[in-house]
Image (cartoon, rainbow, N blue to C red; front, side, top):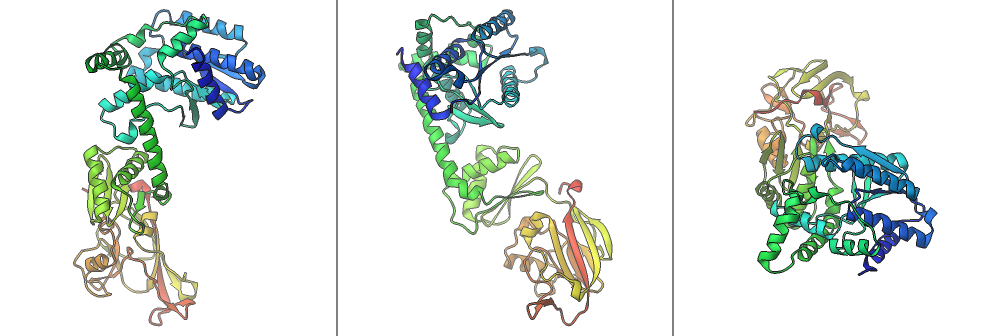
Length: 468
């Protein structure tokens, strides 16, 4: 047991650290971080002290009367060891919300700033297997899904800060036993056992009670669940990587099109939806997640789920996560030369000669999603406004049937204006076509028309309105 911690630390360092890389140690003065400090110093002696540049960082939470004196003792220890020491003092009265979470955020922000300023490769924390068991049990009680029961990781990134936990596989009892062999005395932070805090309740009441009632020590089993959950998460990340690579982002939100590729399994679809909705800043309930995922797999059309100010549309194996729905299209109005606003679109109309026209128009619902459209039509008298589903379309049938035949997602149909002429829809923007058609594959031609109207439509993201 005496050699377990040094070997664990040495194995971790050989796998993750290159000599010369500067490290930052989060030093609370408790058993875990104190043991990690001396393990690092012993490891450095074995290789060469100057190859392991180490900085110490301490956060005085001011939860206890003796915390200021402890911070001073740690500063003196750093001086004795000839190591740089950085101190941050918190004022609990200025923190809002859950105090434990607020302090954790303050610590991470402090470590991030220091790491950037001092050029540190990683910050080391003294978390151990008992911490891991508590984290997994807490997530289990909170109803986390299987891939998210992983708890703490021995290496992870937080907002660009690399975090290492070399002792995560070691029990607290291992750490205390090693400190005793080294004749090292750590601070005793009574708040770690204070049942006023969730951390204290876990350690002093919940885990001991579960172990007693179950008749077996459960921390090892919880840690095993955590490690396997991390493996499951990594497996899913690898499986869904090709789908995430195809995510299309725009000012409108986020689009993921499954329609042209083989569908992943339900568990994988759920994982994808979790990640993309998290990217958009919200989280679906378990029921909502299952509903959206099953709609994707079923291939159903025109389904919509609202979550606060965000909308999710599912249409023929396509997932749209909208930041906003586009504004309602205003009443029909004459299409005249100039620049004007129509709902959430800025529309530019110019008269053009045939020789100056672009060869291919930009249209189609995917182009709408990107927020830029461009078409040309012969000069004439037109109006622009909202589509009416049963309105006749000059290509034949109704505009709604045209869109249905061309599999245009229904969530777009009321959000983009159409061009009217003589009581029918003359031009729409949601299907892909060459407009005007090409003559001899070179120049646009439309029944020998020589004068054209060029229409450019761009999303004006500053005027998003909410469709009731």
